[in-house]
Image (cartoon, rainbow, N blue to C red; front, side, top):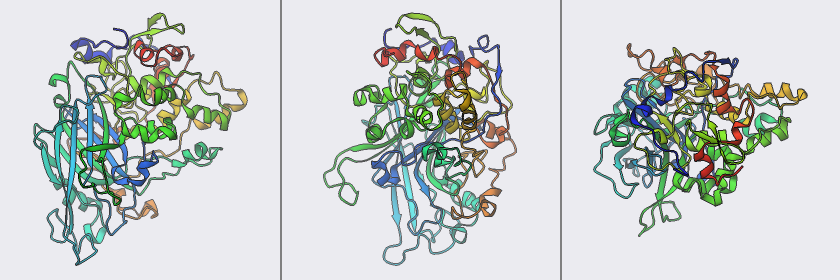
Length: 579
């Protein structure tokens, strides 16, 4: 079918991710790479800077480490929260919609939209300015004067209509301080765990403040670590919190025809909307009808470091179905010719990989799929030697005509750390697929997946030293070390919602004094491997990634770049067979 990738049969779709055993027979050790953490789009576009309550920061999607029949989806909002930032702290917006979107058939249109809306009970009135007027030990404690409640419903027609609520409950409040809410564990036991609500049809959901799982040295934006690699090793977000929506539902609830075996791949992105017409104070104007999308996030860093400044607000306002045509195809063009490699070449003299970058196109816009490739003249060539069907919705047996678009794609059939040959791994690799663990990013995103360094390496084609001048090799190897932020400043939990509790001290307090350092996750005895499945620190931070040279070539642009000059029929059709 011209311009599309055909869906595969049910049995092949269920086992496609394990089809590469022969191709990956010859393995290559890729050395000790930095084990750094994930990141995404904090303050990524001009307009959203002024509306932090609906600013998407990160999206995660992974198989539940507690129940392999469930999938966990996380959407974070309101970045850079200082823990002690009272007296109003960090509420959810009452006149906004917070949405998690799922495309399961590959047409870039949401087949399911989970919608959270919030209301507020503010008991302060003219009596006090305090968020609470005494210690708070429960959600209904009379000392808690500011309370928020949510309603969750689902649309199956692209947001045109929504059914009856499938969950309702109270959001966990912002953390005020130890005198008000005790330690981090007190907060979890008394306020966060009781706020977990059941979801109709199975599963659970939670709206809460949490420690920001995004960690890196943000000085990457200061001309890539200071123009001389001197600005690395400082976790710029240590001590900050975000607002988080966590949803765990049966995989059958989000698969086409509820058939996970035949249709294991889903695409996920979060959005936030505001009333179409608003008054000067930001509230809905009288007579305003409908909502307008103001924020969007799928894969990490796409809007932040791939989309140019003039297109960032537009990207936040469009659905994935508009990606290919937006701004005359400018977004797709920038994926094929990303700015970061050219910037690094300008600063460090390391030659940028040749363009067009079909490897990046596949990771961001189609998912990884083995299919026929075209040569540089546009003629059918050979089967892709990277013979692995991993995380494109085109692999679903009941897929529609496939439309390349930006979203986070997850193959739900992979329930634990797994090698490309389909063998279970003892430890998850924070480098995900390029670390030899196909459960991880860019196949979905676990909490500890090293997406910042993965994407920097991907954009650089970092494993290919053949085109680096001898006098630049030292800089090249130094750049390969990433931002030198080895792990999150708080451990992830072993049980739902897996996120660490909110930071409890001011962000400028030394780490040695922070209460969160004692947080080990919940105490369940039967979930020792949970952190590994969710990418937590229990997965082993010092794991040595062992991957094949060909797999590295797919994601990193390693080996010759001839493969990058000829991509799948899907990719070529989507961009007018550009070369």
